[in-house]
Length: 519
Image (tube, rainbow, N blue to C red):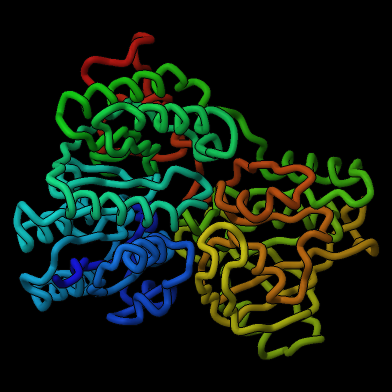
């Protein structure tokens, strides 16, 4: 008897349709592109979705047929050339493997928007289903921020979403998906999927599953999974930086029959809807947030960790340019010494730092240059403290072991104003990480690879929404989310939607307290 053969692949992108910068092949190469056996050698032992799949495959004696593992930093729509290339790699792998494929596990995102269409994952899953036929099980993992379509639900036997934000369960999600596939392979079980769409747009910072209302919703989902016949309950806040019809929250349930799936999905959607007001909040702008952080830092006890600021509006992990200067400008203007700021995506500034060399002084126009930026460049006088190749692996709990490719990277020590706002603050400087490549600085190893211990800052600001919490919150004395400008702003009121399904709370009035019958 031969082992079951499972085809695996990854094609993942979170698309911000408001970004003017297309996501091309080069964007995937900069972030992650493994082909063939590299998929297994590079991801085995990592806390990634495919790393989790490999764990189960080795435990269960499955033969893995790797195709491609490609992901890019969130940005504008995926070019047709890139989309055709990576979907082609997966489908070509299926064709070459032929009848020996017993099942398929794909690591997808769920919020990919290619050029010319609104849904990247649905057509791919449909093509996989057509290739393998109706009897071969197909399971796909999705990001918690997927904008799920009916095509995804119908083509896959089951969808398995991350349950945490920050996504510290990527490896566990891969293991869950692989275990579910094994169950489908080795029993006569079949599954039906049901989707509900509560008409709401939860604010990103309030989707934190470590605590608060989102933790309660996820706990309710786990309770529903204990029901007889329920295989998986998925909660998707959605990705509101995409102006497409499927954008928004959804609950997707895979169960043994349609009635069981429907009842579980509607139960959770109604409970979530009842809590909708808890997913909307007020957050300080950059000036107020930095002032509060400065006061909190001054009032800490000896040995307390830094105050951590989340520059959420310019989160590259949501399609931000990574070069907005609003928060950094306030750190400098308000004289916040012994502070850190990551990142500024500015290849021009990095080149100037490399030309100057370590230990030299530079005067730079920093950030505010990318198409789509909401802020102006910031003029800084700085000292080039370190230069690196931008290569390191995550050591924190999210994506542990995965590679980072920041390109050439500089650490600058920038002068900040004193209390009068006119002279350099002799008490300290702001350490700023400037990179060639755009990437969310979610792992604190970023600082260590440029020679700094982030725990020693008084204030540290990172361009992130929630993912920073996984590695930074344990060291922090306080955390503050900044309602900062940028392409990744978490307040949906900031966007001009033309194509989403309406109404959506809170940008629209939705009558009644009960979960709407039309949802």
